[in-house]
Amino acid sequence: MKHKQEEYVRGDVHTNTAENFFSIFKRGMHGVYQHCSEKHLHRYLAEFDSRCSNRAKLGVDDGERTARALSASPMERLTTEWPYGKSRPKAKEASEKD
View 1 (spheres, rainbow, N blue to C red):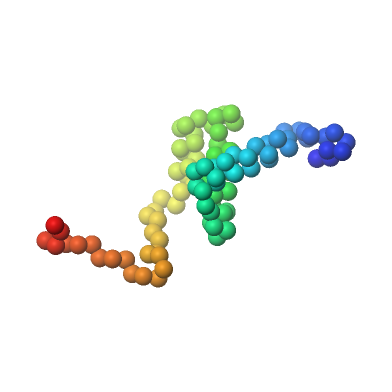
View 2 (cartoon, rainbow, N blue to C red):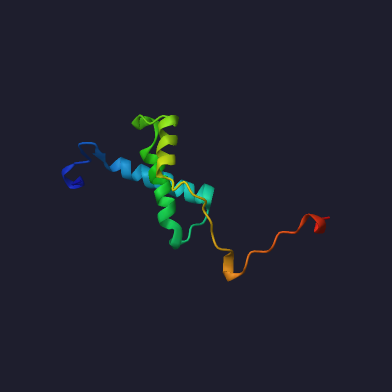
């Protein structure tokens, strides 16, 4: 875009589109998530990109959005390590419960 030449739109590309995306992203980070480490920033951006790319204004209804989300998922159980290198605490057996 060449703003000095009063160019603000080129085909389907608008400067407002990028400004809107980052405005919504900032609002989400301050309002919903409140903190995001640099390590996970790419995940938050991917989520907001997915929201932006799969919205009703682009003709994506709830059924299509669900189908896209399921086709992108690995369809396997997600696991994480217990924090700080500690081992996961063992569950109490039925006889030990209060």
